[in-house]
Length: 312
Ligand SMILES: [Zn+2]
Image (cartoon, rainbow, N blue to C red):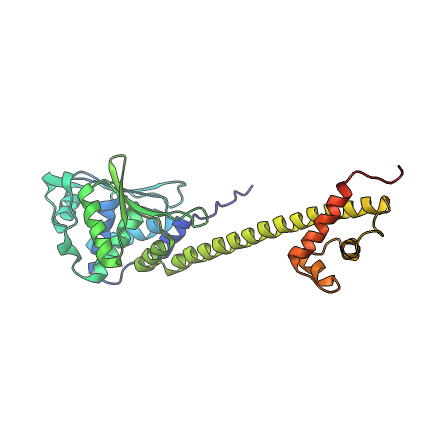
């Protein structure tokens, strides 16, 4: 028996695109780990704990840590394991080293900050934001809605990253609280697309724009269909009423006695049950206006409603 693979989420696709390669420069690897640490599940003086569902991020993460610090995780998952994958560093020396590199005091990890001195180069700022997204971020499938976010437990980090995004990407993310965490998020398709391009996922960025175009096209087509249906059924209903009236007039043998203009209108409508008012108006000899045609057909219906006099 085979188990069907569940289709990859949009978020997973973005992360796969971002994890295709590790940064070429060491400064960027250090900055990317920095973003990961500040936006991962736990970064304290005793534990680094990174939990992810992305196989691609899990594949890249140990290589990144080795490139930045020649360091290995103390606990890492089997890639064959289903569900969430957990990476941990618990060895005190390693944590002390990381704290020192990033300029944190071990005794004061409750109020972590983004140390901008670590992110002086533009390449490193991008790498930091990419790491933050990989560890604490997600993007909703654009078919369902436009939402990109990243969350951190450290409030000062959220504020500083917010400023960093504004500076690096040129637009403001929104910021909100969720549980004890702070969430930075984007709700606009264009901004999400720009952010993905900036982070290094141009294919996913295009996916957002394609989904947007598709949605707009579908809306347009739907609007047009609804409109056409409504018009068509209105015309058909109106014509049906006119045809009934003409039939009644014929049964009462009143048709031939009608003024020429009305007779002409009745004959034209009977011969062309699906024609629009303008089309009928053009068939009159001489041609008349649409309101005039409407007037003639209305007159026919009024006459048909009058109580029959024949046979008395
Ligand atoms: Zn760099």
